[in-house]
Image 1 (tube, rainbow, N blue to C red):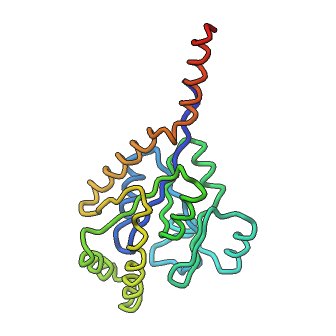
Image 2: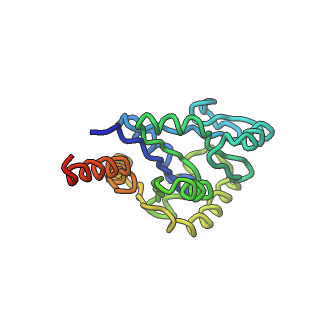
Amino acid sequence: MGQEQKGILIVVSGFSGAGKGTIIRELLKKHDDYALSVSMTTRDPRPGERDGVEYFFTDKKHFEETIRQNGLIEYAPYCGNYYGTPRAYVEEQLEMGKNVILEIEIQGALKIKDKFPESLLIFLMPPSAEELKRRLESRGTESADQIGRRLARAVEESEGVEAYDYIVVNEEPEECVEEIHRLVDAARKAPVRRKALIQEIRSELKSFAKGE
């Protein structure tokens, strides 16, 4: 019946160190109906990160030119750098029926919800603030000063979590992945995301009622 349902836009946010990257990688590995939107950023690559895979790495001048050309769905500064979501890839994947995951911070998430009311916002929480601090320190990629800035930023972000649709606690990664998948599966069935199906059945019912 009818055409295949479009994918939904999923925003996954969380404090730095909450494990977003790991959870999203596992979700993509275990389920083939997801696509990851690769963000553009002006920050330097971390060891092992590849351009066009983890991020599109660029400079401030090119980033600002992309903004002027309306090539980003959203963008925001974070810890002294720009981060943004390229438009074309996201729209193409949604049309193909893929659920597109955006791993972005809270400012960008709220902009997405404003522009795309049917998007699904999920905030990934650590089991505790103490565990968050431990995870940041164990990464070994940032100085104590940088970790301090990320913890200070987490204080600010904790004030905006109520705007999200769901909170998922990342205690056991495997369980966390499946919980997110269940939430997305349920969200796809919500009437706001099944408008085409509703309209099709409504139209057919009207025809039957008229005796056609």
